[in-house]
Length: 591
Image (cartoon, rainbow, N blue to C red; front, side, top):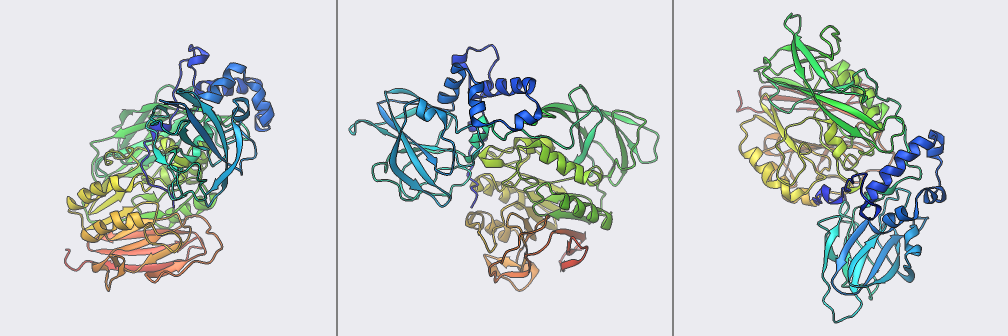
């Protein structure tokens, strides 16, 4: 099960260095940024994509290799220590610095359910300990570290960690090693290592030095012409709209023009600009993204907008603000993974339901949230939808990738900044649309940190309908999320959340109404939990689920919900445009 433990993402971010710094002060980021910039100047795209470990090693000077060998992971020890570097045997190439820096491979090992690990050791004097990169390939199981005093009577104190706020555990059977997957635990820990200080990490740190098979291309590079036009909300849907777009870096400023449909009065709104970088995207490393925040709009009004000019009105660039009524509809999807098949489904849904007010994805929009080319694909497939309807999403584990965080996800969207403390802004948020509350929860962040926030949102809401959207479904046949069942489900029961939407498991399941994990006789007595998948699902058997009302292991689906005051109509539609599930909820005491 993927950990929602809130490892503060900045702890594993890299220090950006001033290019004038001396090499002894340089970081791994400094060295890697310089070498990649040089590679772009000296290598063809084919050459970049064919780099081997041996070629990469030869690119660096002796000084630069010293940085890579000693500044990836550092700490101070108050007494002489034995440091054990514990690395997966599945990683074919041994990091160069283990041998060059006189680490000795031992004959002891340990395991978890994913891999067996070999152990390399070295004695260090008291003082600073410096360890190196995980390798030049982006191997998915980063090494971890165990530390013990050389002299058994010494009390060991570790300090001055880089990355900062290092978690220090105890080496033992059952210990976790990766903060982004804390249920992946050790067994067969050698007796001589038990009780030592265990320094944990995240699986994705290998990307910091990734050069072998690292370079990518986007099929949709930026240009001076605005594209990737997308609507979102960060404020009241009745009176506001946020509009984002992209250009290349030759465009230094952005403006948006808008008017009431058919009107003559045109308003200009300046846009915020920020620079986005994907270091290894060889044909579009830097882009500019712009966001215009429109406010003081009229409820229930259709607006046209134009980017960069007041005389280029695109019929697909329009939106309608929420009006003061209690009827609306929306569409949501499970995992989409930047698939063109999802693009076909989204456009079919758009054609079928022009009344839908907004669209939502319950996480895993892409397969690697740090690869901007995947986001480029996603926007290309859905451009006619997201330029006309707000796109309100939550991150999944693939968007918040390998423990490295969801920075690119946040850079793509403009959402309400009302997250609970300790959770990155715009990854968890809430908004109201007419008579409905939507809790958009980042299930990849710490579960417990969000519990009180969820209760306050529900407690203070007067909405008729309440929905929660997050990636990890608490009830499913494969890996039930017991922490969510313990922390959040009692609040859904207490305040009667009508429906909870999720993904991750890649199948369709709609539960009967549930309360306290028990099926209830009617919708007024319990919450409906739905799991869906927006791409073709895996061909596999699905286990028993006694709480399920409808299930399907085969297909890709979108879900359409229509609310008319006290009546909710739900349907799930497959890629063949056929309904596979439907039901209605009526709240008799609501006028």
